[in-house]
Length: 61
Image (cartoon, rainbow, N blue to C red; front, side, top):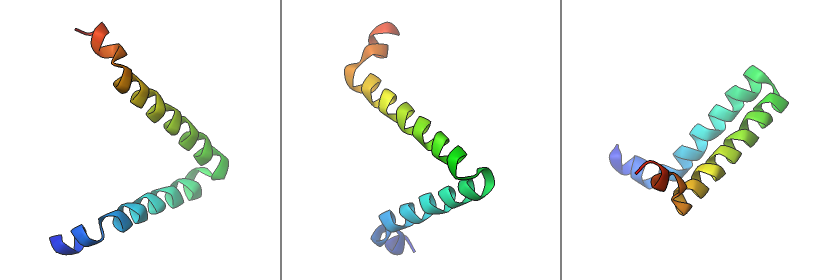
């Protein structure tokens, strides 16, 4: 079973993400889901920027 998961790891991740998106669209609608995804991308980008620049590590030392 672990060999199967290792062989198809990224397709499984893509399938899980697709399922999650489908459930969100069915539950909340297309535009609300799009709104959430846009803010999620903004949050990930901000977190990546904070991690790369080390802004908060200097503040919380």
